[in-house]
Amino acid sequence: MSVKTNLQKILTSLDSVQLVAVTKYAAPEQIQELLDCGHFILGENKVQSAALKAEQYKQYPVQWHLLGHLQTNKAKQAVRIFEVIQSVDSPKIAAAIDHEAAKINKRQKIFVQVNIGREPQKSGIAVELLADLLVYCRDLKNIRLWGLMAIAPNLPDKEQTRPYFKEMKELFDRYAAPYGLEFLSLGMSGDYPSAVQEGANMVRIGSKLFEE
Image 1 (cartoon, rainbow, N blue to C red):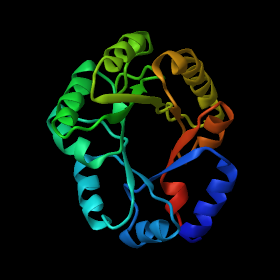
Image 2: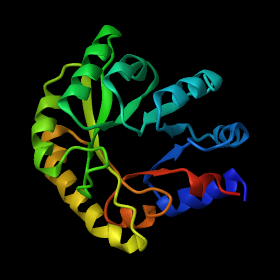
Image 3: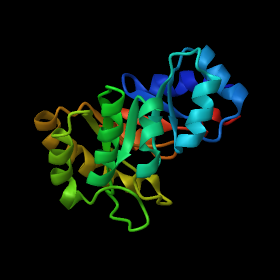
């Protein structure tokens, strides 16, 4: 199937939920087809990959989202490329983003990434430390707290990810009003229907969108 057909199917199923199209493994002609369809919210895992693509597609009004872990030494480049950095999980990263955003007079939109599966190998702030990080980020002048993001554990039965999505929705409901959060970014190609049913209003989809 074409990217256009896949996009239409996914958008119909999502209703008003925002789609971040993950272009990590997409071929250039697939990205071009997506842009020709008028979909401009794109996600990348790495700063360098996004830098190349941002240059390649600079004639389009692309909103780039950083989805992968950000190292502090890449913060300078990141604030110049990304509309949203979805993977903030420590005061150190938040401070680096704030510092670099101040230099270009930008208020950088960020999501705080939560390690909802409590998996030691994964990025994300521990649930128990989330409130402290939100307070810290709220006080930074050049950061705009915009949402929460999480990656559920990769389980064979995707229905088993529901409790993690449910817990994230509870956290979002608790912190959205006090911190001005607008987005709950949950769900990928394998589990996004469950994420949407549990309250996500943004999903990140790659393989499902670009599969033939």
